[in-house]
Image (tube, rainbow, N blue to C red):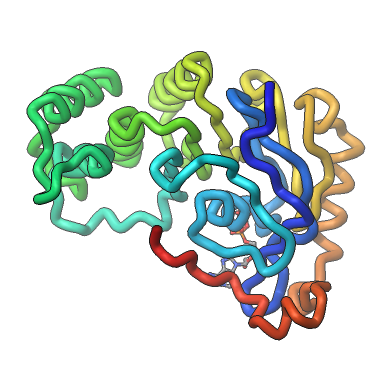
Length: 260
Ligand SMILES: Nc1ncnc2c1ncn2[C@@H]1O[C@H](COP(=O)(O)OP(=O)(O)OP(=O)(O)O)[C@@H](O)[C@H]1O
């Protein structure tokens, strides 16, 4: 497998304070990787940087020939506003926006694919429901249907199974494994270490800095987990990123990427 996304000494900061510090390594094409680590370890920040929502303060991310359209990104549930007055069908169709014509029209084919996606996640008949009326598990199924429609090469999931019932977790985990079997590269932030060990061949363990990255059984060793917790507890929230002066002079901020 070749490298698809390379991180080279990556640092991402919020107002000069590093959330992710000096991380290097690569996600290989077609890999299935869990990102694990204590609370506040920088996992969500890292995903946002990979997808291009945050700009590195130091180091770089090499995405090769990938463009924004190649990424399907599911943020943490807490970051998604469910009070927006939109139907299940329209929410799913947002996954097809890159296919929409000049006037934002969707094809009949997209509408059919949306119906199929809803059926795959077990929600046929929910098309006209308001997203605010769904349970947490049903809403997560809708977001997975949207990802299905998006048909992205790289799928980034931020805690996709948190606060979701067991049945839904099982169904959505099957979809994740199916995506990977189809050759897609999947990167998921996960808190359930049993789930990571059972289903994710590769793991990146971080505590702002890299603790380990590679074969899950090696990386998730008791020694590494203890080290990650100790690093997180020792972390000084007020410390500034150790970046060259010229990079700090540029602000060292987690800037939003300009739209492509
Ligand atoms: N928008 C922001 N502004 C300032 N600081 C932030 C912002 N987002 C995150 N941080 C800080 O960056 C650090 C890493 O946060 P991040 O959410 O990436 O960690 P995480 O590993 O995903 O945590 P969790 O497991 O609790 O979701 C934390 O100290 C957090 O407080």
